[in-house]
Image 1 (tube, rainbow, N blue to C red):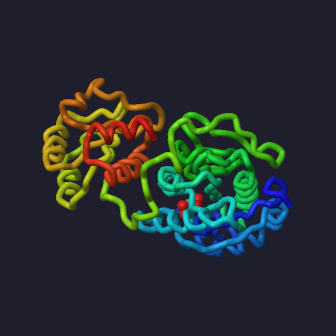
Image 2 (image 1 turned 90 degrees about the vertical axis):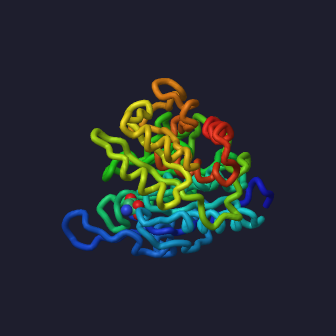
Length: 333
Ligand code: ASP
């Protein structure tokens, strides 16, 4: 067989989540995430054999709400090793939906590959009535096996949609239609095949300077959530624990309450970068609009949500400490 006709060889990496969950009772929605191994999940979906030659590996077995930076980086390194091998064409990663957008984004920013990498999860445990995991997994493997996914960066597939890891976010606490992208999905699964309508416009994977193969920890970056009556105590606490940057999830266009300014200014003087983003899910932050970012030497996160701004800031800090260069990174990725 030629390279064009042979079946795709796809490694499926298990990390836990609800897609690996099982119910703990016969009534209601109680379940335990991360109870099935990846081989059990694959064995329950014989349709996968029709699509690709599958190998599998259990990399983590957790509720993704517990994931830590060193675990995301270990998963990234293992994915990178597998993709470097000639006998692997693509990687699919089963992952809890809670933090899926964070792990997927880290790999999207740092993996040096054009091979497809597809994240997939489910909202219902494996043994639920109308479980969504098996269908989502078949679709994820279908996308990973598709030539259309080559060079698209890291993707997330659920509920018949294909999203870019840059934009995708969990937007509903219980509905199977939980993955949303503010600018819309890249494509859909129609009649069992991926149909792409758009490609990511921002640089990713093999086009970034970020080298996650050599990292086993990220610079410490924390998030604070703005609200009426916000106090400065959390900023002081973070600065005292050695944070390198604070993501300020402000109201509206990243607004910062006047009472916060002296404390944030002191943090910046102490070397901590301040990144303005928004607690609302749509729109970008305008630099120097109502907040004089140049005067404060602060950054804005473009359209990135707080949890994604944390990861981009952390990777950016492995390259530079200069505010102007850090800001350029937010305009680029
Ligand atoms: N708590 C689960 C997790 O993120 C939720 C899910 O997978 O849908 O691991």
